[in-house]
Length: 144
Image 1 (tube, helix red, strand yellow):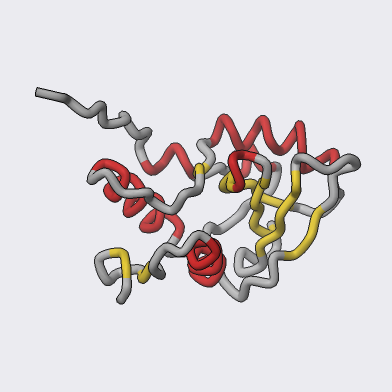
Image 2 (cartoon, rainbow, N blue to C red):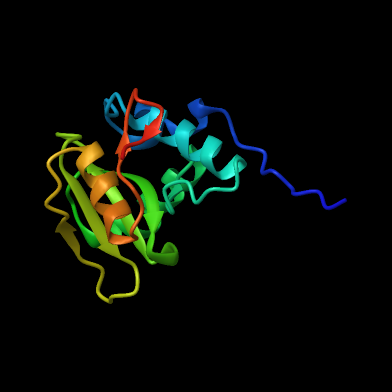
């Protein structure tokens, strides 16, 4: 009998950086933790999750120092890696509806707006790009 190893996920609180880490108060979008929890559940059920790697507080701390501060003076809150880890997505520290990306393969590092209108819009645009169905918060995950 083959056993599949299920990853041990950190608690959802491990994905929320506080003002001590960021240097200012930031309010994550209401769907943020729901999205992470759904992704964990989907991967545990042998799905692809969101095909994104959400950052824990320790990773946020490291990415702030290593990449965000090297790329911009703008207040950005790193929250997820995509593109095989080559893309760092960040919330605007002033407006969590605005999401920026830093391409970690480009030198010098540059920040650009993703053009997403919200966190859910960002997640669904990313999923659409990978031919995954849309994610609908509070509706059990995936849409039609």
